[in-house]
Length: 263
Image: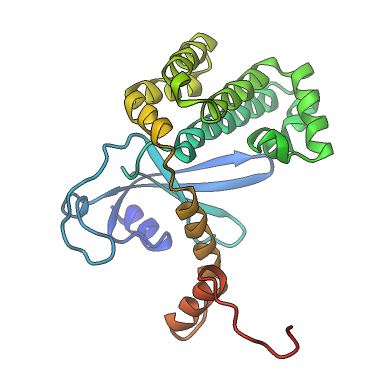
């Protein structure tokens, strides 16, 4: 119990119960993952006003947030936290997370087997496989071509991720057929993380089809949240929250005040 309390304070999650602490390796980097569970009395409360409110989705699976680092060691918080609709951003995020899990598993297997040359080739592969193909640099494109020749399992996982992303670029009328085809391909692959994603897609099939029909997405909101989190880190040490609010309004509010020397 004392161990859980210490980790709760270190990770700044005193309002939740720590249920697991483990480490994950990604190349030479080590990440501490603190698994937490929200107290039952707080599950249906607003995180801002603390009032009880009705749930609005039946989300599945674990989500992960970056916490303050412990020296040079990265720390993340992991918890089951149902949230939003099944839009493109979240469905593709499932596949991206599964793809990175496949990469890390293969890296560890090769390292333990003493195949350090092959393991080293996967070390810098992450951005080449998680980025959209149109955003790859020449070096990343070269790495992707090398992956196709040297590691068919990881390359197959990459193709599954891209095929799922491509569904959201097709006409909504083809959505149900494409989703069913992707679920079948993912299950036949035998790649455990993608079999889990296939089950999640199947469980939320109708919600995903509705998202394809309406073309609604909260991607812009997610992008704004990411920028605000970055500004929060920049504002560490400020005497009040007013400076942070001003930074957020300046960066995201469309405000462009006249400055000396600016035309």
